[in-house]
Amino acid sequence: MAIATTMRPLVSLALPEKGAARLATQLLLAIVGTLLLTLSAKTRVLLGPVDISMQTLAVFLIAAAFGMRLGVATLLLYMAEGAMGFPVFQGTPEKGIGIAYMFGSTGGYLAGFVIMAAIVGWAADRGWDRHPVKLFNALLVAEIIMMAMGFAWLALLIGPEKSWQFGVVPFIVGDLIKVGLAASLVPAVWSLLKRS
Image (cartoon, rainbow, N blue to C red; front, side, top):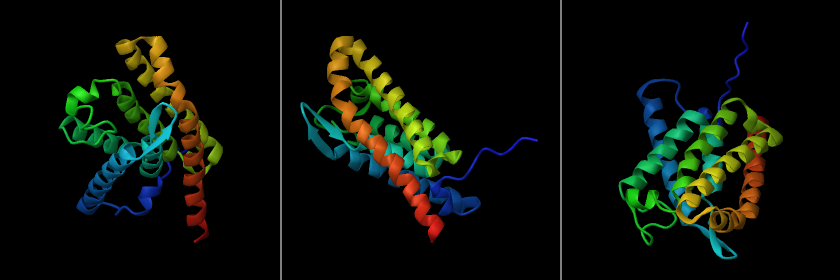
């Protein structure tokens, strides 16, 4: 007999069980998620020669809280908003908007965010979001894959050496901090909920 491996992510505690109310709540959460992603993209921390946004942390937290389906749907909605020309990305509108911006230097990272949400959401659906070490491992794998996608795309545009120098190295420390922060925050929320 197979044992069920799917658990419920944090957001399930606030979702109605069925019907139109559930769908409307999920749509509202996805929209709020895209607003959070936009705010996190525009929130910049200057570390050396590049601005580091809080967007990776936002993707981690949304995916861990929403689970895989709603997390990925939220990221796809965010990408659709960007493709339609809304200034939701870090460099918009200053460095362009819409599809042209998405196929620019950040294109691989943007695509990687969707994969990141799928990995972290999958882990949350299996209860890994309740355990700091398990969640840290899932977040780290998601981070590495997203950075690899960003590096590969950027390497096509400016070459592998510059891509590594400008597209990966400046972000390693900041992104590891974000991985650690998300791996601590989400299980802490679960612990607080268990006590109440």
